[in-house]
Amino acid sequence: MRIQDLEVYRAIRSEEDREKNNLLMIASENYASRAVMETQASVLTNKYAEGYPGARYYGGCEYVDEVELLAIDRAKKLFGAEYINVQPHSGSQANMTVFFSFLEHGDLILGMGLQQGGHLTHGSKVSFSGKFFRAISYNLSSKTHRIDYNQVRDLAKKHKPRLIIAGASAYPRIIDFHRFKEIANETGAYLMADIAHIAGLVAVGLHPTPVGEADFITSTTHKTLRGPRGGLILSEKKYGAKLNKGLFPGIQGGPLMHIIASKAVAFGEALKPEFVDYQKQIIVNAKVLAEELTAYGFDLVTGGTDNHMILLDLTKKGITGQDAEKILEKAGIVLNKNSIPFDKKGPMVTSGLRLGTPALTTRGMKENEMKVIAGLIKKVLESPGSQTIINEVSKIVSDLCHSFPIYKYLD
Ligand code: PLP
Image (cartoon, rainbow, N blue to C red; front, side):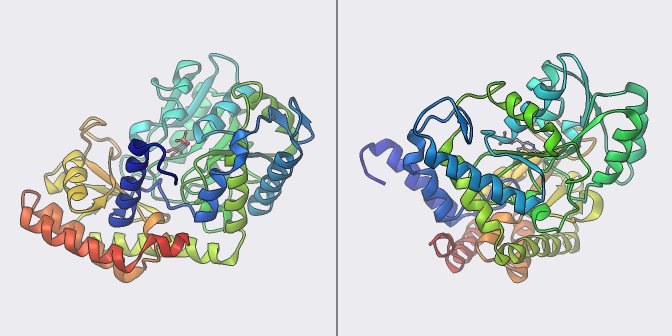
């Protein structure tokens, strides 16, 4: 990068150092490849292209048309869906597109509660989803902390929502999209599957796909899918025209063609056989981390994981999620506090931690490193006031980061 703006340049270099020298375990983050990042920095950022390929409101769109068609074509191959829209700027805008295309103001939606692991856009009062629509939420089973499909069915039968949302930001288990679709069919609701977190796993068949089950599927492209920050919508062809209009001109203007190009690059990477190995390793790593932490006496929500994330319940450890997040970050382990189901503490404090393996796995870390990292987490959380322990753990974190450099992956 040219040193034209020293302040911004310094912040970017510092962020690069942070990403290199810490263990990034935020479940929704990843390291996009150099090709993905370079594409985002291309001349395509200059181009206006309102509309869709072949039907734009601007001239000079022949090359961006090529790019968007490549992204669509690759996403179709990756997910096996009939209709793809690669224009949403984010996962939230993908969800907004579905709502505004198929619901009326004030319609009822049913999604997983925010505190139980759902996303803000699944009906929270502070988001458009809970402001423009009436929202009710399902809880997880109070015994198993897994989705209670009978409860979802009962709520849907009683309240007759127009849309049911299957998907989560903090749920470590398989989601049964087929059962959700049965409930939606029984109660006359649309089903939207939000696969933002698990898109990479779905793409390679390591999580059951909602394609063929859900009416609408929304996603981000930057989590397990390892692309640029952005959104994606999949559906059957019959909903395509309405979704296209709902997105543009409905809620967005000009598409970000540099991001769409970069989505095409990421989808190309995801179609390669190595991506399957990568996703497999994400799950293996999460399982090993879960087993090790359990052996160290940590409680895991649902007792383990089927995907890329773990939710630790710290209640018995006598430390809040907020304090645990802070202290681990001092030692170079970056993750986030998270509410656990039926948490007695508020969202700024919480009783839990969410841990993810996508970024560590991108660095090339495997089972052995997960064992080491579980031991480090235990060490820090068992002596939260000890600077000696923080220094000791920071040194091991630093050695690990040097042994698994991200620039090796990026280059
Ligand atoms: N849906 C789910 C399940 C998510 O976890 C997220 C982001 O964390 C989103 C949607 C929103 O994505 P974005 O942050 O790109 O708006």
